[in-house]
Amino acid sequence: MKIGILCFQGDVAEHAEVVKTLGAQPIKVKYPYELEVLNGLIIPGGESTTVGALLEESGMSKAIQKRAQEGMPVWGTCMGAILMAKQFIENSIHQPVLGIMNIKVKRNAYGRQKESFEEEISIPALKCDSFPSVFIRAPWFEPNGSKVEILAQYQGKPVLVKEEHLLASAFHPEIAGEPLLHKYFLEMVKTSKYSSSRGLSN
Ligand code: GLN
Image 1 (tube, protein in one colour):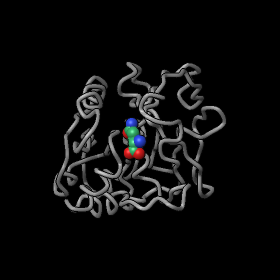
Image 2 (cartoon, rainbow, N blue to C red):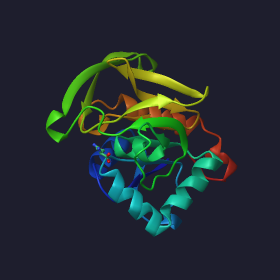
Image 3 (tube, helix red, strand yellow):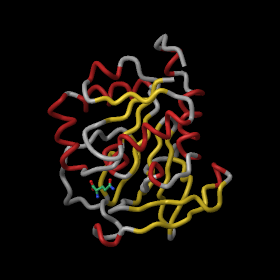
């Protein structure tokens, strides 16, 4: 199973390491043609204004939007999740995004870099009530539509949401040493019809 990791910014090596440990093949991607062979895609953290602009310039934005529409599983962590959201909670924010998921997002919802923190949260879908979650200038989400499932909340706000083949987490599981959420995403990829519909082996 080939899992792309968008490599403009962020914890690319850390995501790749977990994916590899779980028996899948991580592939660092930057250009549209590299999406061809992928079974799924992870978009790491970073700075959404910068990466949003790079995605647009490189043609990656359109290419990812097309794949996501065709059903390719995509998981965004923190910045990745911000870019996946179709709307910002604050109307005043205008920046290029992928806009592939029916969620609203509040950027930097917990404050600045120095207000970053680690908390254990309960994620029933993983049968885990103490998932180590690192929040770094993290967002929170609001579902927008009935297909969005809230998989975890922190202080009453959704921080892990899923809409069919799309997954968004406000926190960074790649640096917490707990592979359960990566495992969950790989399972989403394995059970998705996307790969077989494109003739890709899993
Ligand atoms: N606050 C950043 C942004 O809005 C995201 C931070 C992160 O990915 N850890 O782009």
